[in-house]
Image (cartoon, rainbow, N blue to C red; front, side):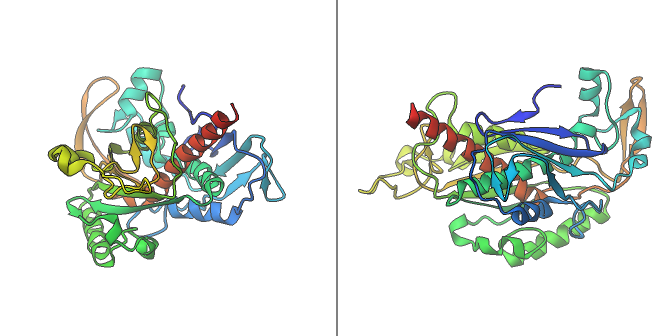
Length: 355
């Protein structure tokens, strides 16, 4: 299986399956001399871990990270950073009923067709549990970036949407509720809706918005390595993501050029920011902002018709512990992937200057 690494200079190679002994990774290319707050890395994992509230999967995993290399006396050494997060609360028997069945909208069928074998326990490698490794790498990338601020939040659950620009929100309120929506009133409405969806044995999708501030001018390349293209790839690599838009996004396609153009101020900033902080694939110093759309979780507690590995139609129903809505736990994953992209481009910018 290829495609288990992300990044060019700041690179993560992840490993492990949902119901294996552990998941983890190796971070290659991280510069030496970075003072690491290991407690903060664990706090980031705690934002993603299961069982943290009534509206997420009740799988109880401490998600404690153990580092094996690349860190000495609280500093990065410049050598590969190896780490693992041990799985401690698997219930593999919850998946025995789908051993020979393909769950609708899951990777079961495609994995079987591509590899001739699949780990049916929780989806194996296709499980969103793999994203815990990304959170560790992203937490380290954030500490390398220092002055760059990356803040993601839930802006929609199903049809419930904030419909407010991020400038009108107090993003400091994001972690004050279990939905991770910075509008307390909307957060309560979203929470009630997710609970109702769970009672129905169903799931619902949503949108995570992200704002990145203090990005230096000049990150990104004008052709194939555009900054927004790499951000899009990063977000679309996250489980359940179905869409990515930055800046004015799809709404911008409805405007005239006279409405959409970002006019310059004398200091090089712009009066508006339809470009979302990126022009010609290169950061321009303005805020970078984007939206990430997540589909409803595919496993539902309702009966559905599907096929088995013999091509026969069968009836199945989800069992076990699953998220009714994935977006509250995915906020930190979006931040982590954005951090890895920016760390990678910062290092590439350093290399270009040296040359």
